[in-house]
Length: 476
Image (cartoon, rainbow, N blue to C red; front, side, top):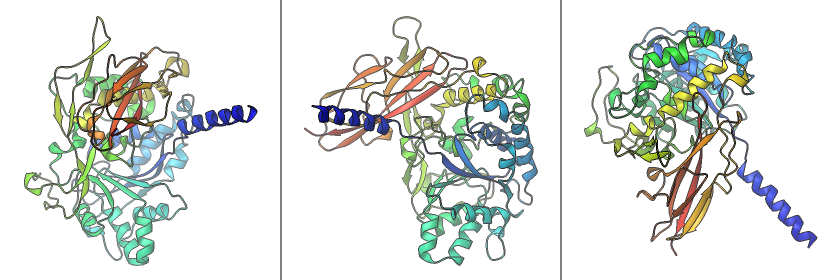
């Protein structure tokens, strides 16, 4: 009997350990054509507010098609120095914010040359050498390269790796790389994709920015509330009255934070899964395929306009009906409007990540008790479960908490595009309680269905965190 009890206790401990694995920070190096557009500075301000949750390994000033002959590392330094003035207050809210001195050591620069003019023998730079140095560190985590402008500093690093290392060494080191570029802003992006065909690469190819998924961060969408991308909202919640870092956030010139989607998916919020772009998250959703060149449009930047020669992670379409508040009866209801295109996969989360940004900006000046902090969703079961075709199953998050003692709301929903089962599976009964009941569809082969739990507190601003439950549905 004592043995049975001991085994039961061990089982509970292991179960808890499995459900609550520590979150591993994603590593990232930023390539930015800062000063080509104020939006790079905007994105940098936001990034530094997450510098305790994302492992920033480099901040490299580069060129682009809009900024061809100069780089501006001093503009990166200026934002970091403003961050340094609020870092002590940020640490009152969460641990792990690096000091400004450590971040300044990560500022590097690429060559002040455009595109492939800066790639080849003798074209090494402080930035390209830094990328190689970080790749060679004894760290098996993937290294994300978040590209806000041109990508030739990475191209030069790859060129040098290929020409100075054995094929085996090069393959091993390049396998660590993950790249997300904000469209193509020089002629080295297509060169990289053509010459390093196994490289993990997310991009809306070419320079037709209006069709790119990332542009949804600042796109006005008819039929929804677009307040949180308005200049008035930015002034009140980010720029003014939030200390020196907020004051560094410039006014919108062409578009708000067009570069931010290249790293939003690295934030550990319970929804984002960086290694699975097709699962969807704050940075949008992307699928691996070779895009149809005949359907692409040419922009006016002068970057190459040519078909892809291999599969890339690129634009994916979501179908989405928002849940909207209801004054009477059930607190939320599904909107009758359904939106469907590749931008939906990003803007569907926009209110959530804008609120999160505003809350962290509050942390720059407020004490803990006067600010809001995100809820902590807690599942009562594993994040992956297996059920039989046609049978019912329960989902539950009864143990969810909020660090500020705020009231919070639950919302369970199926995300069809993220799994293999593409038809919408509705929650049976209410979807806004801590527990949900679902009847698995009839299937003839094993399928996966992703169910998302969104927990939103009632603090100001309202903050959301998530849990993703992957349901494996097997035939009877």
